[in-house]
Picture (tube, rainbow, N blue to C red):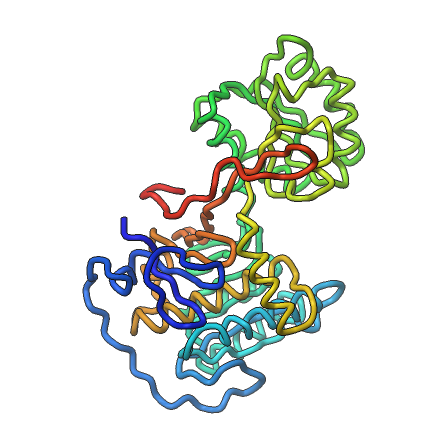
Length: 405
């Protein structure tokens, strides 16, 4: 497969995934890196844009909208400000972008998102980036689909994904798939689960069972637990994961650092030994506190490679003299993706076939591709907890295969 083509601050770069500061497109634009040439795409007409009715970034002829909770409640406004800055940085680092990014405040509510999307389409937006919250995505998506325009949103709630409403956020399903696939590739044949009684837990349990079945791994037992009751759940699972001859050789624990310390004590009491039963988790394990838990040493989890975000964060700090939020990279990648497609794909730039090209793109957090059902896949690395830190033991893929990473 032709490697993705890289775009960056200095324009087109030859080669695959040339730097973490770039956004790369595969397949549909591979000819720009010397690959086979696809059918030519007619250039889109570029009429002189009318003045934007509100704040905007850039002054290109192609209009996209960025919907964020700029005056949203709680931490929403602070996150939105960081994402707005990331969008501005993306335009500054993309040489001569063809975009005008219309900034719209969705106020962190479905009603606000509906109004913002309506205004964006009235001002000529061909693509909507955002919103952030699931309810807002559903509301804005309804408006955009009625107007025949696609959405690339930042939510992690796959229930709001649908055809034409694509999620670029970090979804738990691909993380579960990656870590279970890796465990199976390392000879693991039976797995148990300790899963919190939360919405997140419901999502990852479904993905966990599907991934285990796909890899012919036997599910030896699953225990769900309410907040603060993890130790009791571990005790109930003791016959499966404890002792000298456990029934399972892998234990899936999709839990955060705030709750894992107490749960780890329950595992110790249940006779759990991570040298006999491999603990595995999702990207919520990407926390230094988890890496220091003795009972999880040797455990594996799937998450984006951190090098790209660290480089992005350094450039962000240099420009704005503050730290970006972790999901600011999503806004950077979404704007860069839109700019690259606008530059290379002519009148088809935001069509379904282009947006869901199976070769995907490479951004700040590595490879990603949007799927026709609105969800996404990401090229994730496998990390191992060792010596109080995390180390990559299986790198993120450099290209997507025909059916996945």
